[in-house]
Length: 115
Image 1 (cartoon, helix red, strand yellow):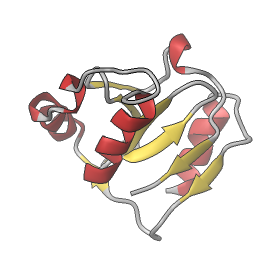
Image 2 (tube, rainbow, N blue to C red):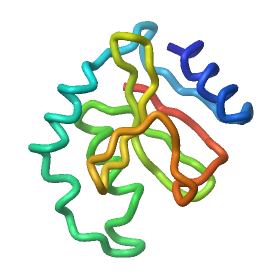
Image 3 (tube, rainbow, N blue to C red):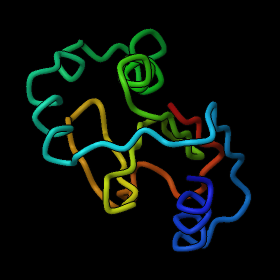
């Protein structure tokens, strides 16, 4: 799993992130099943309140359920790896799954925490 994360950082031209993995093996998820879960999950329905219910709180909700946690220089969101060893970001406030960050989500990964 760490090699997949290191490859993702290399792809992003970002090599300074810390990687925290709780287990030797990674939990792997089917992307379609993750999207189906997100469609049913209520995390994205939680009202956004700056400093009280903001990005880190949304990301913590999904981290507690299944997904890893990632912090950029400006944002907290989630991630998972699928059975093809593809790395995916999850934007928990929008139930969006993407291979890459959007500009507003930041560019400098601070750390990954695995699940």
